Image (tube, rainbow, N blue to C red; front, side, top):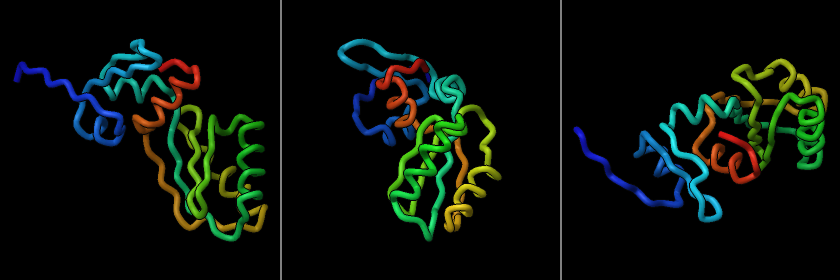
Length: 131
C-alpha cells in the first residue's frame, strides 16, 4: 500500500509474525537489515525440534556434543523432553539423529523440521555469525 510502519520490539515471535523486513540492532549498531525470507535463506540452517523419551539430560548433552563434533549440527539445546538442533544446510540428517538417540536407549516421539526462527537468526548474529 506504499506505507512503512516501524515496529520496535524485543519479542522476536512478534516481529516475525508482523514484519516482512527486519533490522536488528546489536551493541548500538545495525547488525542486519533485510527481508525476513532472505535472512532465513542466507543463514543456511534448518531447525529440527524433537521430543525424546528415555534419556537423561546428561545423555542428551553427550549426544549433542557428538553431533557438534561430527559437524551434523551447528547448535543444540534441550529442555527435556524437547531437544532443538540447528542443522547446517537444508538437509536434516534424520537417520543419524534417530540412530544416535536409539543407541543411547532413547526414543523419538515427535520430529518437526522448519526454517530457522528470527530468534535463531538473532542468536546467530550476536554470537558472531553473519546473516
